[in-house]
Amino acid sequence: MTTSAFAAGHTPQVNYILRCAGCHGLDGTGSSIGGVPPLGLIKTFTSDPEGRLYVMHVPGVVNSGLSNQEIADVINYVAQRWGSPDLPFESFGLEEVNHLRSINISDVVSYRRDLTSRYISEGKRVPEYPWP
Image (cartoon, rainbow, N blue to C red):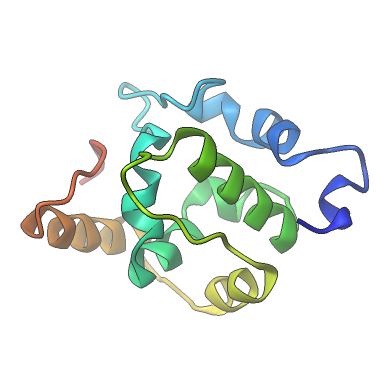
């Protein structure tokens, strides 16, 4: 992590609490009623190039108001804190986040639907997602 993530005294944990916990909860469990998936299966997405792209385009990330470095730090925190310990994880760096966020995904819901369909066909576990 770079010192920029801590410039205002906001560690990745504090940024998670301020920018993510409102939907995903302080414990990362999400809200099935609200259509917010739990974070326990985030490594399903972060262990795949298309999933890594998706994670950088979910509405909560796009609208977080965090810098790309802070986003990398928060996603790394989330994956290490709640991600399945049996799945590998490669940390996000600033260069990768810059690149992934520069790629346009016109319909993130359709992108996620296609991605999770592939994961399911490969026998991977994915969180429930109620959106059409």
